[in-house]
Length: 354
Image (tube, rainbow, N blue to C red; front, top):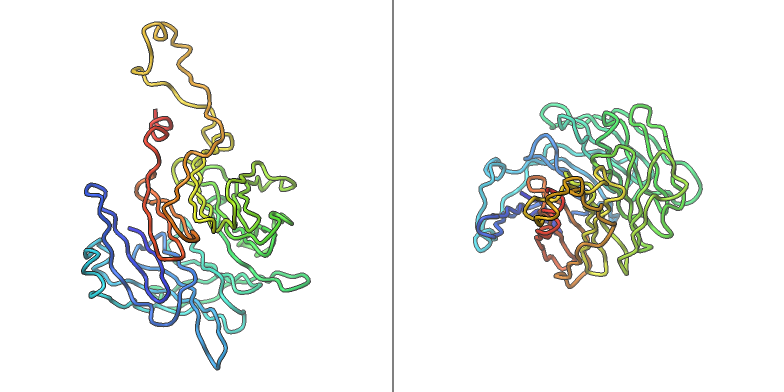
């Protein structure tokens, strides 16, 4: 099941893999146009949104926590033709009060937690919240402010699944910073990580110090946070702003990126993955002569490369995500509202598995 936000509606997408059919339900988000959405890792029925709200002729970006109807949590979905007449409303659990902190940029859930701890980025503030009373109340437990000259505003952030979930990474302007959530102090800073605005971040799920970033300089960079003087690797395959970068949850050599050049690119960054040494060849691939030399069954490691470029979109691709249930399945969403679901090429899948 995938959750996408389109203006004031949330689309719950269910992909029937056996029949290759996409089913969906639509939830009405009554309070404003959605700019960011994230789901609880502990409760599949709970999500958070950042949305625009007009008050006294002033537009603010606020945040709230919601619960979807119970019947949708079980995976019961209407067909696409019927869903438009079956629009339901989200249940508001609580607001994240940002009155004194500015516009909300994003909300991050603790990756391995019980769904009771979240962090929001509001202008130049990092705010940690404890959700209480079945998420009906959000209490601000700690905070930190980004200090310096100029208009300092966070654009995105990512909570690391490593180090007992005590670290997050944030992006502001061209910089990437790491923070310890226990002390709310900065632990590393990558100044000028990109030549222009940093759009997105993602942590390698298997290598605790590795972080990917992307931005308006059309580049995707990979960092070792223990030594941030230079990126470990750089990808320059896109021709416009790169909005999203995502590591595959199971096979961290697979990297997905989406860009304003209307393309989705799947890359194989095997040299900096947790499995950089190739794989065993299947016996069926060996000739009789090769079969006599078992020591030659180790294949040469794959080289870093672009595996596939997907061009089904006709507009800027603003979101890409891997399936949490199937490591070979991913989706992308473009500005014109087109959702595309694709699979990792079968040949690469078997190369990784065998």
